[in-house]
Length: 209
Image (tube, rainbow, N blue to C red):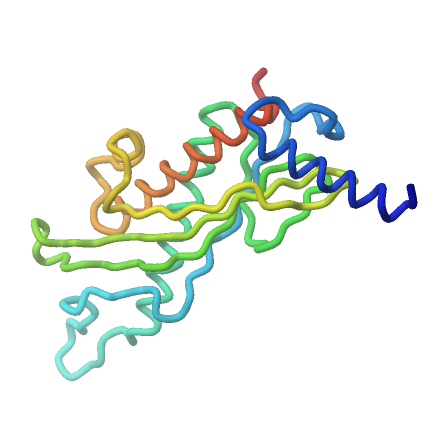
C-alpha cells in the first residue's frame, strides 16, 4: 500500500472510531488529560436585534450610543457568557476545558474543538419583563483533533434558548441573570452537556480520573 493510501485509510479509521458510541480504540494516545477547546462564537452582521426602547441619551440634544456599537457590545457579551458557561460546566465535570479567541485552534494533542455561529441574539423588550421574548440561537460544531491524523468533524447541532431543557436552565441561569444573559447561560449549559456526552462516549480523559 502506498504512503498516500495508508494515510487516507488511517484518517477514515479515525473518523469511524470517533463516530462510534463506544471507546476510541487505536487512536494515538493523548496527554495525561485530553483537551476541550472552546473558540469564541462568530456573530454575523445582522444577527443582533436590539431592544428598540433602549440606547437613548440621558442628555437632551445628545445622540445615543450608535446602534452598530450597541450591537457589537451585546454580541461580545453574549459570546463571552456562552463560552464561559461551557468552559465552567465542563471543568466542573473534570475536563481540561480552555477558551480561545482563535477560530481554528490546533493543540498538537488529542482534543475536542468546539465552535459556533450565532444565528440570532434578540434583546426582546426589557421594559416589559413579562413580555421580554429575548432569545439566543446558535449553530454549533464539535470537531476532534487526533495527533498524526488531523482534525475531523464529529457533530453539528443547533441550540435555541427558548427550547433549552429545564435541566440546562436550572443549572446555568441564576436569579441574577435576565434577558439575553440568561439565554446565553441556558444555551451554554446545553452545549456543554452535548460536548460532555461526546467526550464521555469517546473516552476523553478528564483531569480527574
